[in-house]
Length: 243
Image (cartoon, rainbow, N blue to C red; front, side, top):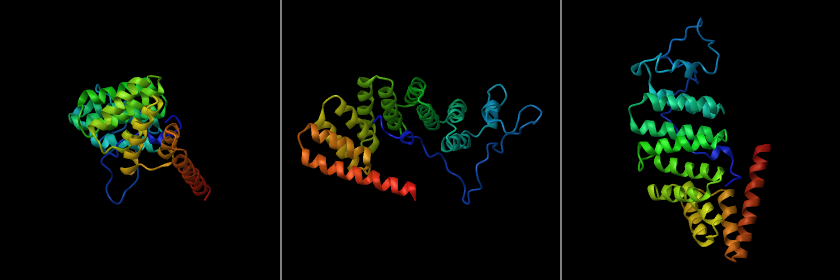
């Protein structure tokens, strides 16, 4: 798991944009920017304006603000994304949206490798509701952050909780398998990896970890076949990048 690319942190897709898409605007139409007070190209304008002391609740559209945060994520402005998601959580009265915002805030901190802040955000998400649409994502992301911060035993607990909430969440099964394998429970780990693969999460990382589990179980021939497949997948990916 420690080799996974940063983009594997799960965050939501938001509400989307109208078709045709007219491009991303850092200054949503609800806000009037006074150039005498702020530099309109300052990356902090959005979050500075969205201060409870300056803006009333009915002047903010939390769903549109969530999309602003997601656009920050897509252009790798993770610090600004985290601040924007926190504003969404502060302003919305919708529990579902609040939980989504806290989960995304955690993902933004994880991209920055700010693990304590990520853990705090995921816990805030779970405080909103423990069994909802975004709870499984919060649990599996929390497990990853705990692992990165050296709390592997707690990581497995939250990975287990993620698959309990949503048995069809493929990445949660992958995380569970990884943590089980780290605990030496290879048979259970391979079963978890198989569940992830059956649910469509078939990539080089999953197959590599499954191969490692099979080796520990003495299934060397199957492990070697998977290792060859992983090598081929990564070579193909490199070729595509070069093209």
